[in-house]
Image (cartoon, rainbow over all chains, first blue to last red):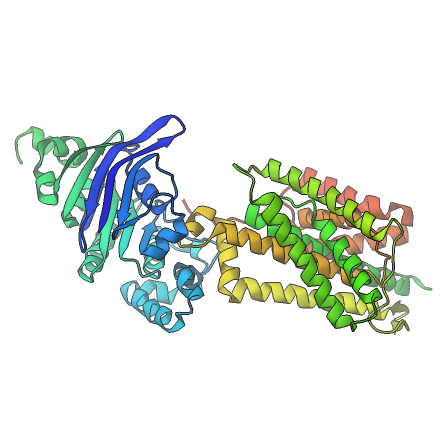
Amino acid sequence: MLKVRSLQTFYGRVRALDTVSLSVRPREIVTLIGANGAGKSTILNSISGLIPSREGEILFQGKRLNGQPPEEVVRLGICQVPEGRQIFQPLTVLENLELGAYLRFRKREKREIRRDLETVYALFPVLEERRQQISGTLSGGEQQMLAIGRALMARPALLLLDEPSMGLAPRLVLEIFRTIRHLRDQGLTILMVEQNARAALKIADRGYVLETGRIVLQGSARELLDDNDVKRAYLGRDYREFAEGRM
Amino acid sequence: MDLISELTQYLISGLTSGAIYAIIALGFTIIYNATEVINFAQGEFVMLGGMVMIAVDATGRFPLPVSFILAVSSVTLVGVVFQRLAIQPVRRPSAITLIIITVGASIFLRGVAMLVWGKDPLGLRPFSGVSPIAVGGATLTPQSLWVLSVSVVVMAGLQFFYKHTITGKAMRACAFSRRAARLVGISVDRMVLISFALSAAMGAVAGIVVAPITLCGYDVGTMLGLKGFCAAVLGGLGSSPGSILGGFLLGILEALGAGLISSGFKDAIAFLILLVVLFLRPSGLFGPREVKRV
């Protein structure tokens, strides 16, 4: 569904991505894990068209995405839930959701949009309760739900999630991840960047490990969860158990 | 005339010019929100509105409403062309580069207007009658009523646009975060184009309704633009309600100052207010109230 081939991206003269190749198959949850600054978000932003890539190729359902502006990427069916949610804070919850379907409004799909709004409300009932509220006043978890809901309103085929658990209480992280898995079960394909590698790998099918702009490891989520290097480097909480040979 | 009716008179003229300032300030705000640029050619949109209206009306071929539409649409076109030719092609645009371009555009438009219409200011017939209406002890000209009602319609229309159309909502989203707006598929370039069109149209409307009260010449845009800018800063750059309030406040203060102190101070008052605001409260009355949650 999505193929990234030897992608190279630079910030000025600094190389952010070094020949990154990865693929996402339909109805898969693929996660990118790695330390801060490893280039995880850069990959998502290159796919979304926010950052130009110098070399390599991004293919989505056979179409080249390189050089396409973000709005064209959305039109083709890829939606990003950006890091830090980036909801439109001065606007109401409902307006945020409507703007998620911005391109479809311009295609006059009013009835389908209303139906999708109901679907999003069913997924996140709190958004319906607060639909007239200014979205900047929502709690962190609610904002994350809104950001995901907004992206769903575009009816994407591929959802890009950038740090969906960031800054959320553990109970909410669980809820968000459960929702993500539910979305996959409904037929959505998901590429997710996460700091919380353990939680991400638990719901993912496959994963890629990034280090300073390169993919150093890839495999099924199970393999990565069991991999000693991954455990030591990214599943920090269990490091002690690991060292004491309890795993 | 006793003091009360004198004050009423100042209030009326203050509200009239305030309405004009408010519309011009809204023009600044629209473009500022989309691009973070102060469009110093805003006053020239106002001037062009008046001049084109006068020119179209002078042909004697069209009724006033038709001339009005013709004038507004041609100035809107100027705004669009300006954005496409001078703003959009700039590579790696920084706010300061773009602002200087708008200053250049303003000088250019003024020059063209001078060549086309000459240096002498021209007048426009009032929209309806000249017999003043008595309000309390003061008088109100029908044209003032036109100014006030047209500006109310324009402001309400703009509010409607922002709150109830998807494009208006997209513009608000874009003003908050261009990056997030792009991620939902909003074309920022399109929003910028619309903002120039809208802003030029608003300027034109202001220029047209004020033309019968003050004469309109190639150089009226400078002062009107600056007053509108003062109003926008007073209200808080980027805020629509702020621009409206700032415009009316500026108009009233100016009228009171001119009436009670000396009419020689009329223009100085606007700039005095601008300085005071910039010193004491640079964010203006309705400065950016950001709802932030950490």
